[in-house]
Length: 129
Image (cartoon, rainbow, N blue to C red):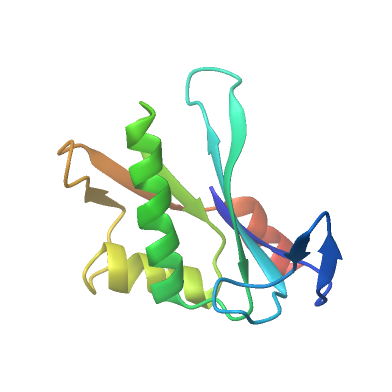
């Protein structure tokens, strides 16, 4: 599951570290979060947080690639990716994962298994209300 969390746009110095900056030194306004959940059990975990100032489909794809590589390295299989219906997420799915043609799944280049692409219906309903 991939989601953005809006945060206060500020920089703080805490415990000898500067908090609130992106990798390129901009002040972050959102956190791009990657979460995993078991299909057959109760396991859930937050696996990556990327501070961002302006999220693009390209940046989302870069972060996605890092997270998928990490998940495979520790023994997890990615079988589905869930996002809300935001423009950046749609562009990420279509342009970067589906090579320009919308599909419900893509083939994992390492395992050869399908990875299903899901738009989270709860987010879609919340945006309409």
